[in-house]
Length: 159
Image (tube, rainbow, N blue to C red; front, side):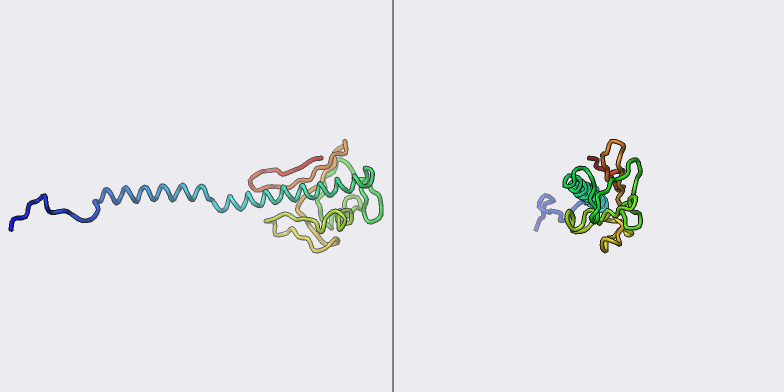
C-alpha cells in the first residue's frame, strides 16, 4: 500500500491562525466595552434625571407665579423671591422665610424631586427634605434652578 503525501491531510489549526483569531476577539471585546461603558451610561442617566428634575421644579415655580400675577404664593401668603442670592432648595434653608415646598405641593407637584445619585438628597414631606438643587433669582427677576452634573459640569435652566 503506497500512500502519497498529497493524500495525507493535516487536521487542526496552525499557531498563526489561532493567534489571529484571539487578536480579533480581543479587539472586538475592547470596542464593545468602550461602546457600552456601564459607568458612563449610569452617569448619563442620572444627568438626564437631573435635567428633568430641574425643569420640573422651574415649571412648577413658573406656574405658581403665573397663577398669582407675578408673585409667589406660599402657604396662603403672597411672597416675593429675593434677588441676587443663591439658595439651596431644602427644608433647613428657607428662602427669606419661604419654604418652597409650601409654595408648590400639592397644587403644582406631588413632591419635590431630589437629586439622583446623591445619598444625602431626600424628600420625606413638606417640612423635611433636601433636593440637592439650588435656586437663584437675578436682578431682572429671571429664575435659575441648577444642579452639579456628573458628565455635564453644570446643569441649569433659567426662565
